[in-house]
Length: 191
Image (cartoon, rainbow, N blue to C red; front, side, top):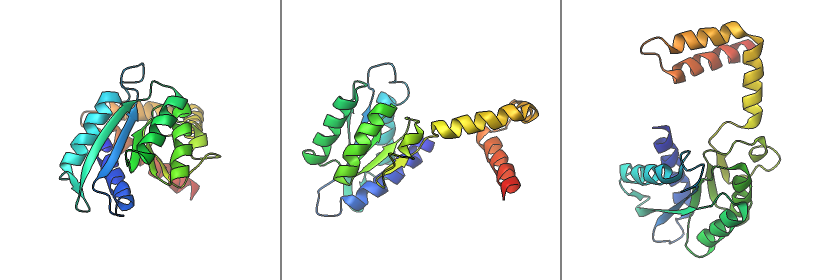
C-alpha cells in the first residue's frame, strides 16, 4: 500500500511535467531486475507501478500513464546512461526505484540536469538528502543518518526497545502504529 501511494504521488509529480503537449506520462522503473537486489524492487516494483497506474484509472491529467522498466545491472554508469536516454530520447517524465546509493547519486545528477522527477525508494545514503540534495528528488527511504541516530537512541533506552517488541507481539498491533506513537512521544519531549 505504501508503494502504491508513493507511485500515485510520482504519477502526479510526473504529470505536471508532461503538460507541455506530450502524449503520455511516462514513468521509468529503473531497478535491479535480475541481480542480488532484485527482491528490494525489481520485477515487483515494475508490477506495483503498473498496478498503481491502473488503480489511478490509467490516466493522469487526461493523459495515459505508461510504465517502462530497465535493468540497471547494479552499475552507476549503466543507470546514468539509461536515465539520460529515457529523458532525452524516450520522453520519460520521472524515474523510480534506483536501489543502490551509487546508482541513486548518478541518476540524481542526470535528473537534476534534466529537471526531471526522481523518486528514490531503496537507496539510503544521507548524501542523497544532504550534500547531493536535489530539488527534483523525493527520497522515500530512511537515510544512514536517521538509522544511526535511531539506533543510538534505542541503545540508550533498552526498556523502550523491550516495550516496542512486547507491543509488536500483541495481537492486532501494527508496527506503523507503534512507530507513530514513538515519534509523537519523542517530538513532545523535544518541543
